[in-house]
Length: 360
Image (cartoon, rainbow, N blue to C red; front, side):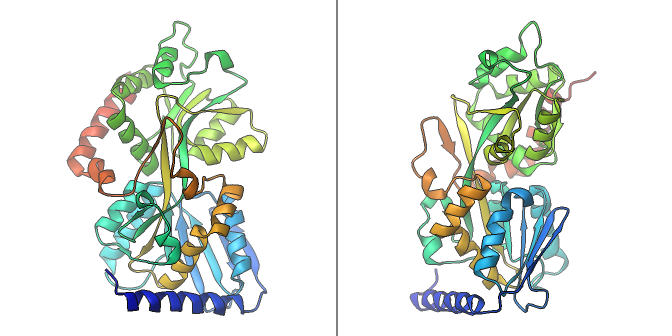
């Protein structure tokens, strides 16, 4: 553990950096690209690189507020899949161990992969008043932190599924999939867990919590399930009418689409609703870990949490301390690593493929 003196020095350094950036010139411009956003002056010596699975469209308001508060910092944000975020960290360390490179902060909804990066030594610790205020489930080893939570839900097209037939539990969903008129045949979607970190996490948690998980997967396969790579991909299919119901989507992205007028509705499964964390780490190889820490502390501050909830639709960490009945929050820690064991993962994927992709 850090000594009290080291802790105080770290606070002083963070405070000095915050003051320095606050007093810097305010001129900056936004540069938007496919899957990326750059804010701040091009000639800045303070360049903060953030890689995250959060959609640029959904997360942009948070980035812009941080940029307004820290106008001298050039913020380079890149949206990547959860699996790519993990693979990049491991590959970077293998190719150039100890050499500063890559992002200064990584944010991912695949909290199991983030936990594994910490467990395997790819993250550096950070202690601040903001991290110390987190509940125990939201801070593991002072190296991985929940910045907000997101329920995993079912979503359906209100134009194509009568509200009276909507399933409110997984057992009801299984019954709908087995109905004689086959209302969801060829019209149901779920994550392709072979390439999606968050999809794999949700599916393995279902297996851990629900004795019917195997039967539900088999019913997906019999109904010609469509596989989606991300929540945004699934929402596109729902809006276009290609899919009627999607299983295991993120609430925040769905709420954003509904607010924009999409004819969709959310189902919070009454048997249990998983609540995952959007988790953040400062990579051990971060060139500007101090700036990564500055952004992390902003996200965990009262102002940052309010902005996250208002702009991105994520739930503040404080609002998840006492969950509602039926909600199952997933705690950061070694418990998330069980299904990342290579043998367990291979066995799970074999069973998943046999159920989801039956012989034609």
